[in-house]
Image (tube, rainbow, N blue to C red; front, top):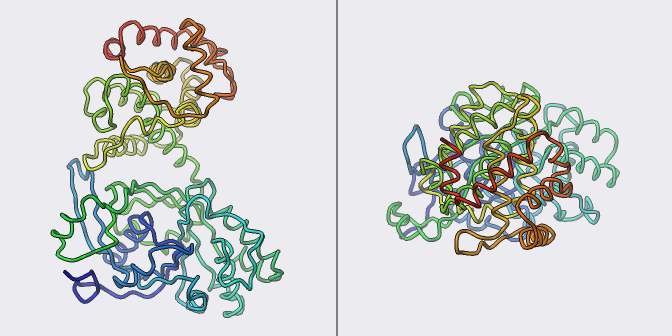
Length: 478
């Protein structure tokens, strides 16, 4: 059976307008898929040159397949479980700068180049003091980018229309801001001159972004079946969920250059992405964290099964729509749509998320993902969010390390585990609750100072202890 190439499938060739640092699963299932859609449906004509950001990578495989790969999207779409696939053809070629640095750097001379996209892991946007302009290549991604931008600045004589729109996808807050900061640091370290620094500041746009799509990656265990279905060998098959969201923070002009709306893509252009980041953390991540101790102690092992359960599913929906969404400053329609999308993602039959795996470091997760909703709800409503407090009581119970007659393998910071081991071995439930809620190391504040909070958490915890989670939860949602 032949390997995938451009002779065997109907593909297009596009103008190289995007340089992309990273050739891994996420970018190919996320940004490249969107570029592919805009090329097909909106005449975007954006070809991608993929740059391997570290010494080991997939560029050789990618070039062997002429930049092509098959993308499977699996999940809930328009209310139905759908698995669909297509060949993505926007990547025109790949370059390994560790082997062909000049091939990499000459991209700076391309007058059509307009966009930089990256995903070099959370550690990728980092300063390396050992990077120098004369390195071939620089070790860090920001170092490589600075070298490319400086070459472009020199070649085009600092022309303002040859600046780039730089859209990093690394999962760190204010990723564009930090990338620009490091580029400017290199410009200063390498004595690249005030004119270059002015060109970076005035003619290049560094966007902060938020990206959201679950990408399980290469479906190794399914490849025999997939290969038979496709009729060709593809060493770069990638799977992703149907849901996607790309929030890009920058000037209004960016929207005019990226025809997302014409394709129905869920790309949000904004001058302030914080409400969207907060929405994701509170609703998506917060729902996950709120669910884990409740669903797991109820006797359920997976996220999808939790949503499908009439009791646990109702509990989580009420928590999301009645207690989390009202704390957020976005239009109700947007919040409700996002919340419904989250529930569809949780119900995805093609992805099995184990609750116990999500339970890793649940105390710190609860602090950042759920506690802000609790405190904002109290502030706005002047009352307590009962579902979120029931989840907090369940979390304290979870750290007892027992589910019926079986032990729970708890995974958290050693100090957290030692704290709960001591509490549950030596204290009564009221002391466990008081000591946990007043632990400023956990929460950053003393939660017992909020009127009625300690009493309610204790009430829910005692109900779980006395009745078991199943009966306690059923009584709670009556």
